[in-house]
Structure formats: structure tokens, C-alpha cells
Image (cartoon, rainbow over all chains, first blue to last red; front, side, top):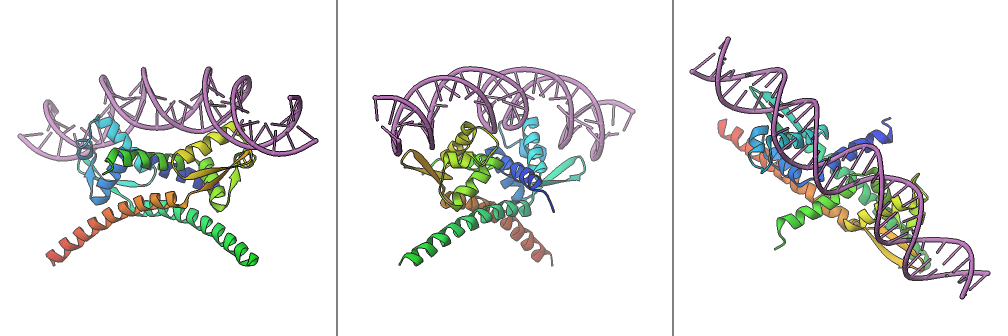
Length: 111
Length: 111
DNA sequence: CAAACATACAACCAACTGGTTTCATGTCAA
DNA sequence: TTGACATGAAACCAGTTGGTTGTATGTTTG
């Protein structure tokens, strides 16, 4: 079994990567279609290196993958990683639902 | 209309709050039921002040709300905030779906 | 009222983050 | 093969974060 800290590392990386508006914007673009790093960089008012680092953060989190095409690196978004984040939120929602059920059971008992 | 940077601020706060394992754990506990800050703090190997700051971060992001009960502050998780994060991920998924549809249309055209 | 308890807040510190500039490497095209 | 282009990576800096300790404030209880 994968130890909980490894899962936590993954969750840290995923939420951390999403906790920056530039990275969320990059992710939107590469989910819509492949883009080279220079292509992406041209869209933002910051250095190429800064954008390249953002892409690297997204890649380390598994939200983006790159494939080489000539001298370009084409990045595209990984929707399964997005879904894995959604499933973590579903788990939270399930915990909450359990609480509500327990409350309902109590109210039932009282009446 | 709410300007995009305000929405981005909110998204930054939400993802940022979730990007820490201690805070995710606190959130799980308070989604399952109300807990005082000291109660929460007793569960972790760090100072009370550290845990109190984590709760404050969650509260600023709107993931947790507190109500006073005597000398205690009872924190509980806000499932609607969790859902608002899930809906951001749904938006990402929708962007991706659009890309796939465009690809399918192209393939259709070719055949 | 006094003592104990629950919380909040401030000051401080080390580590991390998001940006910069500069340099190195790899690939294409003339 | 040389020059231009695309990327990666290092060194650096300011601001933020996650932790600490200490102090102040409000609330309950004896």
C-alpha cells in the first residue's frame, strides 16, 4: 500500500500547483490544446524563464505532460490529474455527508 | 459583475488553503463535526498557535466557519466552499472536453 | 474577585516561492 | 558548420509561509 505521506505529497503538489493564477491559466490553455512553452510565455507579462518554471511546477504535479516536437516542447493538460483532485474533494464531501446522516439519525431517535 | 482578479483571489485562497496536509486534515475533522480549536490542536504535534493559524487560513478561504460557545470557538467545515472548488475543476474538465470535441469533428471531416 | 482556561495576536526565524538575469544545451535551416 | 531559435538550469533577491515563543484578552468557575 502507498503510505499516506506519499499521497499527501501528491495532494500538496496538486493543490500547490493550482494555487497560482498564472498556472491555472496555463493549465486552461494546455487543456484546450497543445502549446509550446514559448507560445505560452508570449501570453504573459513576465520573463520566459518564469513561465517555463510555472510549466515545470504543473508538470511535476502531473497536471501537464510534454512531448518533444522538433525543437519545441509541446505541453498538454492531463485531465485525469484534474479528476484525481476532484475525487479528493468528493472524499471531503462524503465525510460531510456522514456527519449529516449522523445528525439525521439523532433527530429521528429524538422524535 | 465581479472582476476576474477577485475570483482569482478567491481561487488562490481556496487552493492555497488546501495545499497543506495539516489543513486538509483539519478540514476533514471539522467537516465530520464541530471541534474547538484546542480540541483540534491536541491532535497535532505542533504548538497551539500553529494550529490556530491553520484554522485562520481555512477560515479566511471560507472553508471553515466558527461560532462561539462559551469560551470555546467551535469550527465546522463549509461544504459549499468545497463544492465551489469542485466546480472550478469542472470548468477545467469542460475546457478539455471542448478540445476533444474539436478533435472528433476534425476526424469526422477527414473520413 | 481570582484563578484557570480558550483564544487571539505580535514578533521573530528558517525555508520556500515567484520573479529576475545570465549562461548552457540541443535542434533546425541556410 | 554556423547562426538562430527553443528550452533548461543556475544564482540571486524580495516577499510569503509555517513554525516558534510570549503576551493580551475574554469567559467560566470556585
